[in-house]
Figure (cartoon, rainbow, N blue to C red):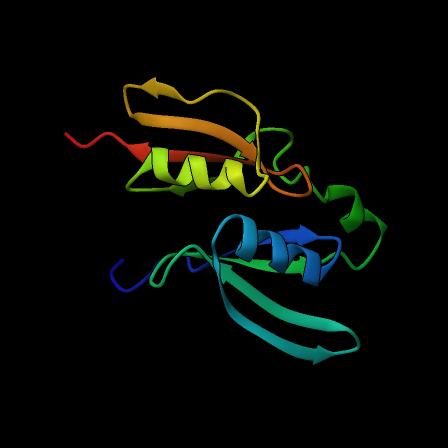
Length: 131
């Protein structure tokens, strides 16, 4: 259907401010919105660039949610950060202290390496192969 897109994906976090710092300072995301909702809740959105899908950083509110922090996808890569220059972004992320779990590898679909966010959620940094 025309006119639809996935705009946000929720990432359950332990602390709003530490999550914002990680995504903005270490990954270079933009803070798109940070609105107080009352009772300590906030609507916090970060995104890698304008026009791209964002992450809604949602602080865990109870024990079942806290149990999911860092393991929202059962240990699988759940997020894919696409880049137009893998080497540039990989080097910048390493310099800022991002933990990569493997060396970069060349695959038929592009250049990729898995990294973890501050809670252990797995991401692919990927530069797609252009045909």
